Amino acid sequence: MPINEIPTAEQIQGSVTAAFHSVDLINAIVAGTQMMNESAQEKKDCVKRNYDHLEIMLDKEWFTDALTTEQAEAIDTVIAAGKTYYAA
Image (cartoon, rainbow, N blue to C red; front, side, top):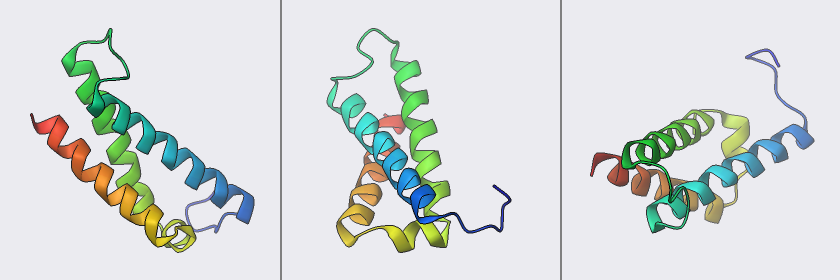
């Protein structure tokens, strides 16, 4: 999809769903229930990739317009948790 093209409603919903896969993954890694066999650095790198992705998505107006208040708060919360985890 070209950069300036606004996605369809179906594509937007797919992006929101994908974002929440990142939310779930970050939460699971921080909680210690995901990627248990990987090194601490691999876990940190995965968390960083996922919160970087979420920050990129939050820069897209069509994406943020599609989020409920609760979804936006969940993303903000997990980004903060991911950054804390990565910095530890």
